[in-house]
Image 1 (cartoon, rainbow, N blue to C red):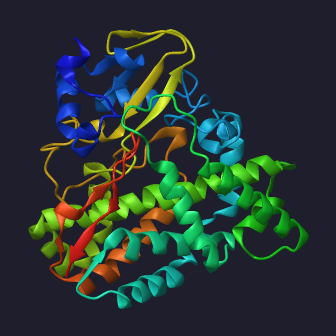
Image 2 (spheres, one colour; image 1 turned 180 degrees about the horizontal axis):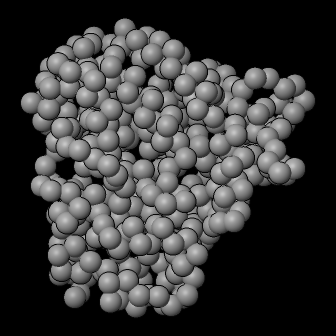
Length: 386
């Protein structure tokens, strides 16, 4: 089947605007689809995606999982390593980002959301007025970043996430180098004058007598900050948009706030911020009857698998009453999203405060601006009236 028959290319903006019809076409006609123009195999069915995500020895993350991957992250950052090194890094990270440390952020998150809501009236751009300053505040509190630097970090990452429509193999955005330099200085300062934040904790974390190298700390913090400021922002916006597009669901969750956690999971299934990530074949392998050569690149489409009717009845329907025991909104397997406990906490608290405050808010779709990225889906600007 030719590329023109399917029409899918994750770099095309018309695909990014609404990728779901393309996902359906691939699931039905070419579930392991070879996008010849980019020499890429696209995996879209639930069972096939799960088979890839749970076999890191066969489908590796060590060569990168984003298009235009940062060379600094290869073999260093937790998302860009395979077991056993990935397991060692994750154990150290888990020792620092404990359930207790994450839960302790709730009062700050709630106070920040209330403060941000208090600054707007009638209309606002949700992304710049609420989502971005909220995630910046969370990262600042977690890592000990001064509030005066929040705007700069946000600006760097907003610029870095944007890609040109045709950019297949461009160089990584220079803003990432600025971010890593900033973090290196922060880590050096904490070694000289320790505090109680997670930056200091990472400099002393130890598992089985081993500690993180300085480079691993810097790249690890940068990866976590980037994930929060990019994907958490986008997921907050996707959630706000999904509820506006389904006012009966919004009315239900406003009437019964106990449904907010289920609503978060359904949005993460129905319209996840991370749409797809890369894996590479460690040896010649087969998926659904299609041979992938050694070194071949796979694009594992979480969002396509999340709409697979073989796994989710009425998969295209947004339904916060749906019973979900699993989905790929936070990936799966060894590389399941490390930050999902913090993300779920932040989104729950945010919407506990936002829903009663914003009421029957409305989107202003003609002024909305999407983030342009082949791996991610969300908004740069999402104006609302309320």
